[in-house]
Length: 421
Image (cartoon, rainbow, N blue to C red; front, side, top):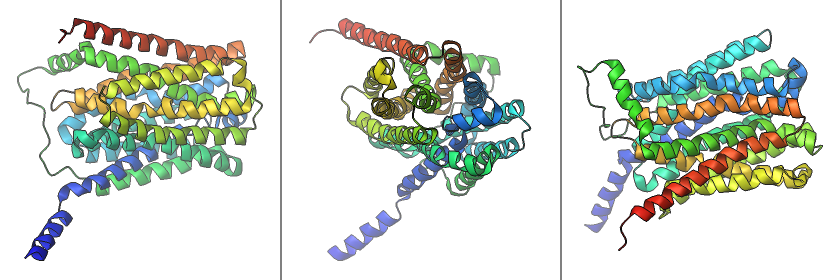
């Protein structure tokens, strides 16, 4: 009888539909990595693109900004579509648009046309970031959500690390156009996998309340009130400062090592790969830590802010010109400056109103886009004007210091107002 009971239990476990969450996590991570593959590798292609297209550092940064411009509004649209229609088609079609735009970009006659192709890439990518996060959040409960979200968000630095290792080799052998073809094929593979394998969790999703009698403009104003919520303000200040560091490190690591530390382009690209690999580990480890931290997920984000401030400070000293030290600092910045996103996005999903997870993710990520769009070309322009990387690193450090000081001050004031026991 005991054996029969054990067999029944084993059969039930095999039929447990929630076990599919690990498949969902895998395909969401892969689609994230595949969709961000080419854009994540632009920093590693810096030397080759500067040579082939005659670009300045500011123009190189503008390539990253072009890919991030459409999500400024697209993330809000994508968030609303996700809440209404679910993740499968919204994410799958968006990833497909990324692939097709990269394929068209490989035919670009020059720099302006390449910028246009990357604008379309950004429009498609607008669905992948919030859609993948929402799909994972819907399959995992709070006890595992941080870890799962960290794994999923590791897709971005994972894709960037692979791109940084592969695309420079492709560019050397076949030219810069071949790198866009490679990115096209990888993105289309991610789109097909998500469309073919994703499905909704067994439990019915929490749907937004119907608002048939309320005008669309009024609905949008109601949603944008989230911007005034103290919890969302705290989230967005941390997000904009840290995402600036993330993209600054991604676009400037190779150039800094090549110019300031006299490291060859190939070796500098390998350091960037190591930094992005550290970012993969950071997103998983820091998100898993946030699951167990008694101070909450935001406290882990604050630790990341303090860590990146320390790393940027070292780069602004003469030690930033020492190859070994600078390489180690970039790996450190990879762990914390990329790893923050796992606990941060898990915190966003748990702060969002019921049934509005997609829109909350889109809203928070769209605010981040303001920094993503402006920071890379501004950093490049500073370097072009001053012929030094110190002002660029200072520009990243100062807002992070201000955001950290503001968050700590707000936390102390909250604790002072709490009644003593």
